[in-house]
Length: 167
Image 1: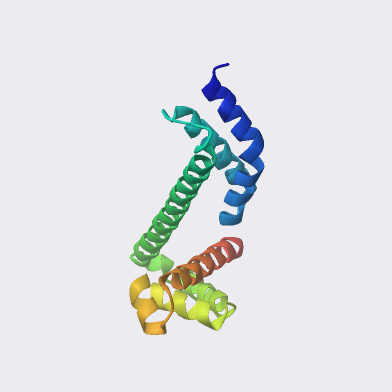
Image 2: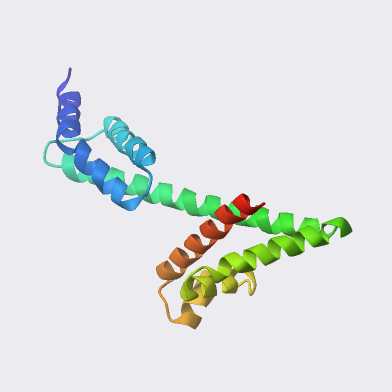
């Protein structure tokens, strides 16, 4: 085994658990965290210039970049699901037979929103009913963009999961 591979094997021994913990703290999925940790070291193998002095910072930089990519994909996926949900709701209104079903879904959605905390419910209503952007909501409620994103994510996840069970 050449010196680069030995250095990476030692880095894996020394840092894999710390990298896993670092990733796990940022995403709430143990299997995804393990996959990202493995990808981190695979990417390290692809690096042209790796030396003992920089291997630690390089490993954490790669892990951080992979976590950011994962989170971006996750939020993009949520936007796509929301778009599909919105389009399905609009199309179902076009058929007269579905007015009752749509009303039932909207009522179930309203009841679920009432179970959310007031701040989370407010963000959900502003997003879904008033079609405001995250930046607009953050400005109006004097919250950070990240806080609004968190409320939006929690509310959509809660409503989506409970609507699936109810229907």
